[in-house]
Figure 1 (cartoon, rainbow, N blue to C red):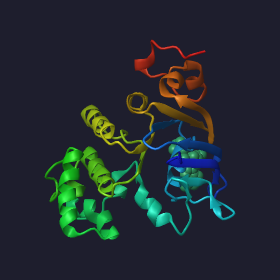
Figure 2: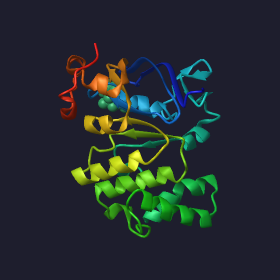
Figure 3: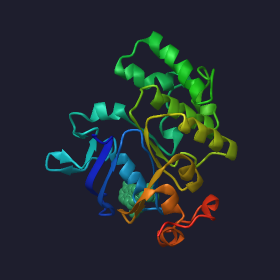
Figure 4: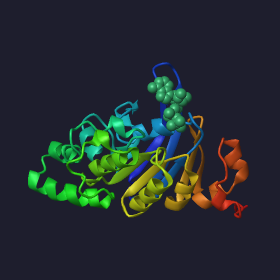
Length: 250
Ligand code: ADP
């Protein structure tokens, strides 16, 4: 089956010469939910930005990233933006309209969806992300957690095939975190989630990729990898509390 995401030997250096990714390869099948973990500076955010062409890496005429078998190129990048939705760390970077309604409607308006359909969908999606009837609120007067849900609603309304999340629980209180976890569990699309919140990864992702110094150092079953104390410590991570009783398969 064609993978949802196929990354082949992806390398990327920033303008100042920092080598952020040094030959990363993996495949993610449709409907998988995959955790991406690693210490600060490992290259997680840089990798996520490549998944919808925000940081294009070119090898000849082909990109190292293919979405459902299509290499990302300047010709198809708009279509890719619709298929691959990225929830960034800071919601303030993504909210710029006077009302929640306009922010959530922004994407579908760009794609030419009718206002009637948009109205119906905005109501439905706001309920799905746990902020029903927020249409007329100002995004700038919401809590961090509520802003993040508005951003998520703005992505989900476009029916993305792949959802990419960068540190989604970073600014959430315990209740907000629990609620987000439940919302994400109920979204059936392919997901890739970068996080330091390892309990979130244990709860949501059957598979995890460990990145360090721009390279994949482990890729496999989440419980196996995260219960491997030696491997976790070697890469600046800690075995999560909930897995203290587990020992990795030899
Ligand atoms: P992570 O998300 O795992 O913390 P990043 O992808 O943010 O890692 O960073 C990977 C490496 O690239 C780090 O060494 C970081 O300092 C560097 N880096 C990230 N963004 C930039 C940038 N805009 N310019 C130069 N170097 C950067």
